[in-house]
Image (cartoon, chains in turn brown, purple):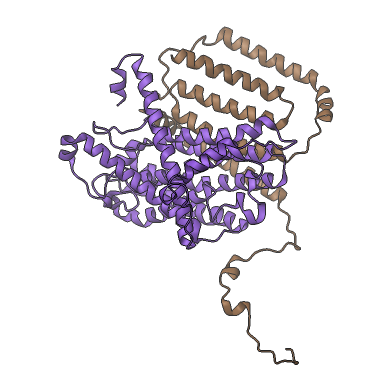
Length: 197
Length: 363
């Protein structure tokens, strides 16, 4: 049963990954990419790594791919021009493809041929979540923290690069807005007829 | 319950699961039909109107009449729309909304430690979180595929809004997970037995945490409103600015699927609040283990009653909020999410984590 499930999910993963580069419309590409992520999560579930599968869905599908989709939808892409442009890169693409194929062949010749039947998704712990937590927060705590610092630097860098102080923008002062009372907003006048204020 | 299914043989197992899913879906859909009516009735009541009262006694059959009308209408696809994505978006929304319910435990099982749930996942709460974070795709795809300005603006707003509020929902969930020490929803509910003072919203066993858990509960409630695009955070479909947001071009069955998915998600959020904070199927006073042993079925059904009652109560609160609170401005919404809820819930995770690590959690 698990074997058939694996066949179906692996087939969907490969086909949708192919469709990511086959699709003409970039939005369709992103949608296929989402399907690829999702079926990869299915593969994780099949080997018993439920926690990893859910994290993949939450982080990649739920957040990263949303931002991808966001950006791609906003782009105004001219497909014909785009296609002409990419044709120039095909020698490079073929080179990358050959290297990658060679790596896969080498891995399959010299590496482990099949997954062991009793794959341990949670080595040294009860659940997958515990095993990952053990590795990340106990064994490799320093590296994990450093990775966090790198991300923080990247985030600050992005903000510094894009933040320009524009004096003409009108900013909202929330504290001022909420502290406004009825008396500040209007005053009552009693204009006499023919006099005005 | 799963042991029972396995003992039935190869053919009976899948059939039993299919039967459970069918029954669950039927009950869920019927509940949605009447909750929708309740929503409209509450809204009407606050406005001193009568609400739907023509079809059936007190308008009880209104939802079914609407259902028939949606099904019989012609599906209009706008010119220039991306046909496949346009029709796929509502189907996705509805499918995901149903899929999330497969992990919700609704009542205690007859064997202690088990529950009435279709799939008792070890990472149940993460599964719910993952599925609800996928809900945004239906909206973005629908808004984009309509090839129209208002739907696209609505979709962009909704994507930003849902991603923002998911963050604080995630942190609130983490505080509960820290207290329980498990991501299994059945374990989370069973951690709260023994009476209403043990519910996570009060967390009486870990007394000092009350000052954290009550605000966490409020944050979760408000974030749930924002996550499901309910008023006062219904900016993606704000009729005064965007006509109806991402739904503008939808009619008949695709619209029905959108609306059904939306309401399923709302009720899902209500049941999540019930499970995470209000003790799930546990009544306010514990009946004791002896009672559960002597009357297993009565225990199950009283559990089901309490679960439905609490979920219903939260849905009523959602309806009241819709009727009473005026709509937020978009920048205020983002400010609330990122500058108030996110830091508060982050601090709460630190506090609860520190408490669990240094004081030890009592259950």
